[in-house]
Length: 414
Ligand SMILES: Cc1ncc(COP(=O)(O)O)c(C=O)c1O
Image 1 (spheres, rainbow, N blue to C red):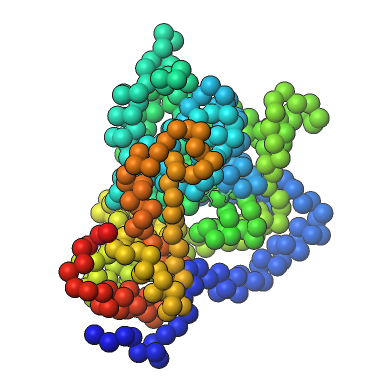
Image 2: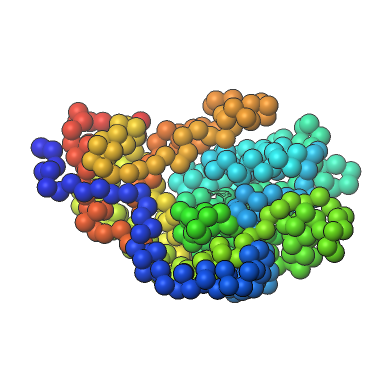
């Protein structure tokens, strides 16, 4: 078949925050003006109010505002006393910060491969890793072959889909590990946990969110939040976020400047009430992609985002921070879409085990085949609450056009 007619062309960004900010322009400006008039710029009433709102939204007693998702994880690791001589299990298929923070506190990141359907760490692989490579010492602590003490699992809810937290929770209990949830991309995502429905970030000891501007709940700069149930841990986190200071100018521990500022908290406080509506709109857009892929007979070619918890009676079974497909000839497809002015992204082009800065960990290419395959095959398509159906149809038609232009009998996956 011929190419798409040129009158169909339109520019489709990966993310467009324009409509969101236009709609909320007035209340956001008012909230910022209040902060300017108050002269309280850091850890003031807006931060306290936003912490309360997030705690209520997540149904947890404690929320601690911090300067970013990265600083959230750094503060968590510090507050849990994780450092040199310790090892922490996580996924190699995530944003750098997850493993970067583990290394920054002096602990060793231990990678375990992902489930190719969900792109999240595979619980059975975690269990297998510990059983094969670690041993309990006389005190009952689990140690790696190098003698490092196994301390925690950092579960990353990638792209807005919760990890299998029931299985990870069981494993963490069995091996006495802290279960930390990197929910940077997954605020509001749900999972059927312990006979009820729980939100991402609330199922382990402690969890955190990033409010980086492109996140589902985005600030106008950097910001983050830690949530937990344990009061002692919450108190520690508040101390670590301010240089370990308690009381003022008395330092028993070394923390950092991980404070959240008032302007960001004010903006986020205005936006939070709309989060569920935006999540529903992202879900509707994801459903539309699914229907359009079927209409364009693309399901033989590409693999749409998996929705493993869809049938489990959850509302936010996925919050679609990203809509990620697997596509044969991914790079050529991306180039084709770029020529059609459709923005896409690759999250992530290289597993963390292959990053230069982690060469000292001793991993090599081939160690995590599913991560490496995902790095070759995944492509994030435009998704945001206000994306138009016309724009989505244009994306799908452009993908179909690409494959029509390819020789027949291409395999489903590269
Ligand atoms: C999975 C994951 N972890 C951690 C972070 C770090 O968050 P921030 O950018 O707010 O520091 C991000 C941010 O992109 C992320 O996607």
